[in-house]
Length: 241
Image 1: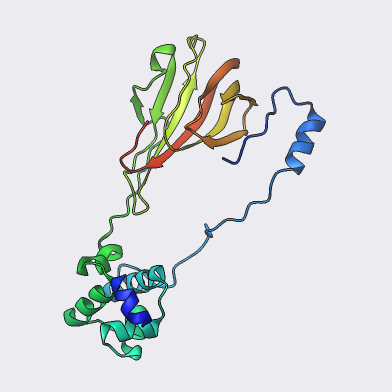
Image 2: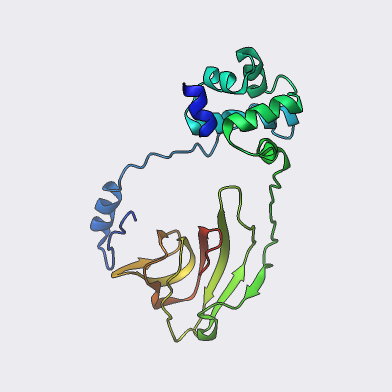
């Protein structure tokens, strides 16, 4: 019985060093088509700070994760199909007894239904010119790292660190970095020849580079100073660089 079962239950970078203008245009035209799995402009039709709505969304998400139907879950929890539908749509406040039956059928603790309601969603605002100067590998070589904000691992289990990196005429040594996660660079000022693995990328203002940070990477040559770029590093929880 399906209800019983539920209860048990790098995109490689393209080398572009010293590309002539025509080749650069051709490269842009050959960029692969990417299908995004998430709509960045999506809106929620109801606020999750309403307890009934938060519980309903969590019940639906857990049910879909197990791949069972509304009818299957209702049968496994011994509640009516109509009641479960109202719960998932946030139209009723389920009793503790009902929530306990659902938690057993879904194989999760009772507190799992409150995750979205109690989840602390943070934001960090940093004024222009502010931020925290931090010590990282490369600081001794004249690289200035300014942390623009920090939010620990979110519900997705990912930590993100945004830095403003400044390279000056004092930057005479170019250390090679290698760490877990992904990194995104966006050039703001100057010009740098940046290495990722065996590839070199000549980056000027407006250019960006997104890569697997597990490969050796870092500035290879400072062509125009001062050089400033944003570096946004993301990595799984409990793993750092």
